[in-house]
Amino acid sequence: MPTLQASMQFVATLACGIFAGAAIYINAVEHPARMSCGTLVAAIEWAPSYKRATWMQAPLAVSGFLFALIAWFAGAGLKWLIGGVLLGLVVPFTFIVIMPVNKRLLSPDLDKNSEEARQLLERWNRLHAVRSALSTLALMIFLLNF
Image 1 (cartoon, rainbow, N blue to C red):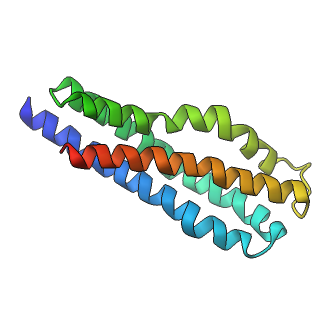
Image 2: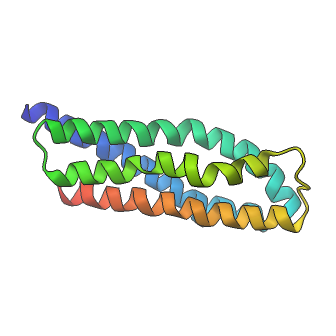
């Protein structure tokens, strides 16, 4: 079991680290850069960026959670379960809290150059920061307990 536990801890930490790095990059670099181009360009660019990031981040969050859960079952301490749950929470948070904003930003009815679009993009960035915080906290727990 120690080999399984260590392997699962490693891949959970790796998945979490990649997720957290991508999430922080989006909040700190990509989104501010798109917003600096004006609301119209930001709203237009957001859609393909969001769709591509989904295919990277969703599997990382789910697999990181599952690997941490397996590590915990294999004998890792409770902190591995806590870190895994924190990482896994980004999934329901995305579906419940962020998805309505995503759907509105993707709506063909939305005037991409409107004040509403600007406010939605700003709200989206604040909500996405929760994902960055949850995954970074999970990563710190994993690294401190490896």
